[in-house]
Structure formats: C-alpha cells, structure tokens
Amino acid sequence: MSEVKRVPKGVDTTKPNAARVYNFMLGGKDNYEIDQMFAAKVLEVAPDTKTQAWYSRRFLVKATTIAAENGVRQFIDLGAGIPISPSPHEVAKQYDDTARVVFVDYDPVVMVHADVFVSGLSGVTPLLADARRPDELIEILRTRELIDFDEPVAVLAVGLLHYVMDDEYPADILARFRDVMAPGSYFAFTHASTETAEAFIARAEKNLVNSTSQLRFRTQADVAALLDGYEIVEPGVVTVQQWLGGDLPDTTLAILGAIGRKS
Image (cartoon, rainbow, N blue to C red; front, top):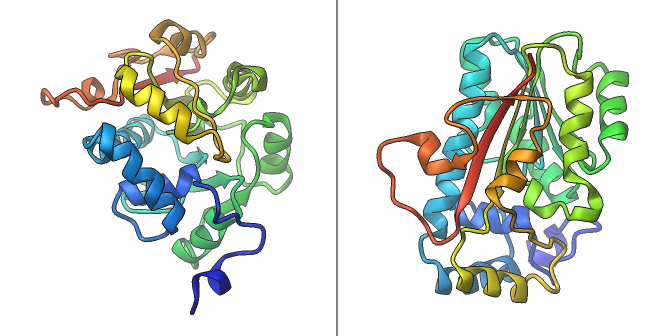
C-alpha cells in the first residue's frame, strides 16, 4: 500500500514530527521520509543522539519501576509517542497484572499505532488528548474512570516538557497533577538541557522552524523549579546517564531526568 494511502487522516507528512523522529531514533519503523531526513540532519551534528534516545527510554523504564516497586498500580504516560518496547505497561504488569496504564498523545498517528500495539490488553488505554490542557485531560480520565485519583498514580512525561513553550506554562501541568494526585504518587520526566552542545541547539532551532514541535532548552534550575511542591527523588535533577548509573558517557544532547513524589 502506498504511503499516501496508509497515512491516517489529519496527519501531515510534509513536516517532521517529534514522535516519529523519536521512533526512528529508537530503531522503529513507524516514521516517514521527512522524519528520517530531519533525523539525519540531527545525527550530522550529534551521531550519539540515537544512544541518547535509548538512555531516555531506559529512564522511562526506571521511573516506572520505581513507582511500581513503591506500590503504584496506575500510570499515565503523557506524550507517549509511538509505542515501542520496552513500554510502561510491560513494566507495570510485571508487578501487577491488573495495573492500569493510559497512553496520552495529541498526535492521531500515535493513536493508530497505539491501538494496534495494546489491542486486547486489559487495563491499557490509548487516549487522544493534549497534555498542555491538564484540566481537560484530568476530567476525561475521571469521567471515563480510567484513573482513580484517590489512589497513587505515576505520571510519566519523557521527552514532552521541552516541547511545551513558556507561554504554554509547563509548570502548570505538574502543579495540576500534584493537586489532584493522592499521596505516594509520582511525576517523572525528562527535559532537554542548556548544557547541550551549542552546535546542536543551533541546528535544532533551525531545523524545527517548520516543524509541528518547537524545542525549548532549559537550565537545571528551571527544570528543578517545575517540581515545586514535590519531594525530589534522589539523585535529583541530573542527566539521565546519572540516573541510570554505570559511568555512561555524556552525549551531545544533554537530557535531564527528574522524579518528584507527592508526600
């Protein structure tokens, strides 16, 4: 079947898409030529970006594991992207087969693949929604009884918040979930750091001009401030390599990882 015919309605294949580029970096096949071209430009400046993508994925697994080991059985994966293993539901259900996992993304192409990926799995739900509108999202999760906010929940936002611009108020996303979550809940996320090589930042800003996603690099202090009102889990707001341990090398694209717990 031709690419044009298999493209879901409303999906623009003339502009690179963050979820599809990330899928390509992870070795997935759910991406288009425009995404591969964008990725190639990134890799010219930073050949280790594919490695960094897997570091971020391993952080997602680690954050899910930490929450599950501390009794959390509900997970919300914000900006989930195109599903690929290892996935949060695969980790969560190792601890409890009744665990609930909701994949949230605003990209229809993500939903098409998510529906196939989790088809037939009990307690795993793909949800087309925008994380930048937390009030609307929380209402949907409550109304559809997908998440019980009276019980602990882990919100995962790996590779999302650096696509939320300042005037879209990223701190409000964390604050709104903090206000409704039960004690013992977690909010885990990654974020692009200003410690990234200048050449990479310049290339990203140039190449993303026509993208559906703009990238906002923030300082470590700015990222830590997003966790206002949470107890910051050690080792704190540090690179994902430091979270993973094992003396992993730095990468051209510096990504911070952070996990906050509601006391």
